[in-house]
Image (tube, helix red, strand yellow):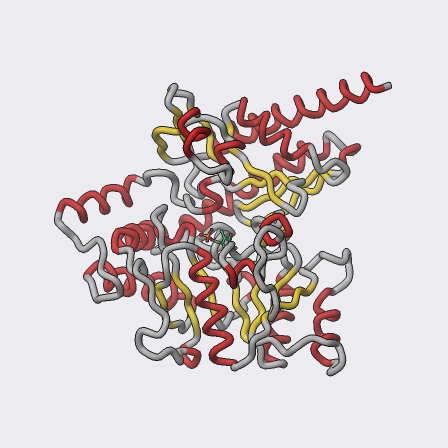
Length: 425
Ligand SMILES: *Cc1c(COP(=O)(O)O)cnc(C)c1O
């Protein structure tokens, strides 16, 4: 750890939550330098949906390198890119009746978000964008402006104009927050500039696994049509099968104008892209460039992931099966502790366990879980939610063992809390 403390910036983050040196990983298991094995319920914040070092992906990538396949090609035509485009078109877009143009951006999520915002503003010739409370869209300037969390926003003295925030589904209790949004749109004196687009996550990953309902998403789509605003779904964290279906919005039957994808799309390698309706394709050639828009290794990995996991419903069914196990067990654990007002919520294999009357518990549980050899993160505005994001391919036994470790950590934290309380009196 000294090496990192002495030479790496204070900006270090996850290394502090999970203080060991990881050396190898396979599937849902991370192994550190001393040979200790950890169950991974974090999965690179949703980057490792297909697991660490997925055997099919690794094999294809190794073969590609051994055969001197193109690794870097700017956005020139390559075999790897051609095959990815064909596979994505045939196994993802076509079966879902989605007609989208693909644009490859710089390799991280925030690059895709920046591109989506730029395209929306360019096409609509308007500068305002509407984002939602607790939304997270990345940390470069444009993406940060549509991110809600003050922890990230405060230290960046950028101009945050041209963005308006609206309450996400559930933010105001039972109130339909879209009625509030609608009022702002319909009243010419509300102060809201008609936005070029609305950007939203169907489940807010960093925001605490806040789940938008089907009805809310459908109404949001109608509102966008009514007021000529583009609907951007940021599917970076909860797309790629996280909710069972490939896209997290499929269950609502909506067709966003623009979709951002990153995290798991490259099978664990850096890759990001946006999808958009053909009529929005108003770019001039080379107008939005970037040196690493074509990570060909990621194209190979992504194609193999599509071929392997998205040519049948098997993965979708497996996610739903494992979701039932996860939800049932978390609800049982929550019911044992009515005094803590626990809420369990999620969809697919993205679940949140929020301890409502004591925001500090989630962080302590994450730390204790790490001692129990479970890697699990927190989310939410006060990090008050324990976030379950296991690889989608996790086997049932490992899933259950991970939940056991979580439960043990939670019980230990509850006992410590009670001891502290009795000592105070
Ligand atoms: C992680 C994430 C991003 C940003 O991706 P980076 O690769 O960290 O830039 C954007 N939107 C959502 C929903 C995310 O979860």
